[in-house]
Length: 118
Figure 1 (cartoon, rainbow, N blue to C red):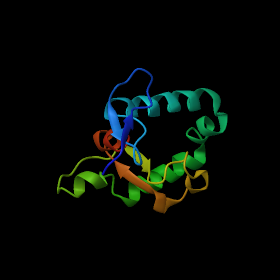
Figure 2 (tube, rainbow, N blue to C red):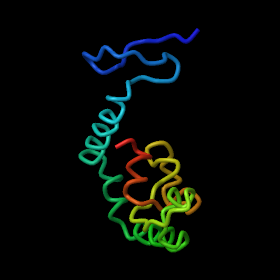
Figure 3 (spheres, rainbow, N blue to C red):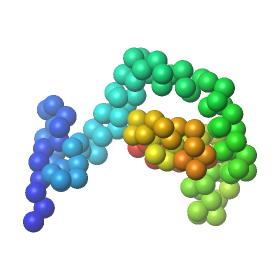
Figure 4 (cartoon, rainbow, N blue to C red):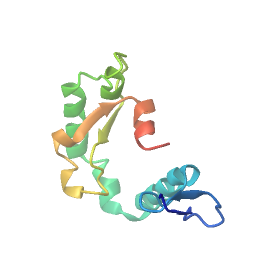
C-alpha cells in the first residue's frame, strides 16, 4: 500500500507519495525557483562562477563537442540548435563537477526548461 501525505507547501491540500515526494506537481517548481532566487542573491561563488572565463570556455567546449545540437531533441530525430549547457549532476548537488565536460550536455531552451520543470 502506498502511503500518502500532504504537500509541504503551506495551505496546499494535495497529497503526494510519502517516500518519494515532498511537494505536489504544482509547487515543486515554485520551491526550485525560490531556491534559485535565494542562491543568486546570497551565494556569491555561484553567481561569479556563471560569469567566469572558466565556465564560458567549458560551455563553449561542450557546445562544440555536441555540434551545437540539442541532445534531447536528437533522441527524437529532431535537429534543434542548442543554446544552453546543462549540468547533468547539478552544481547544488556536487559543486566539484561544475567544470567536468562529462557532466555537461547541450540543450535547447525548451528541453532545458523541461529538465528543470519550468
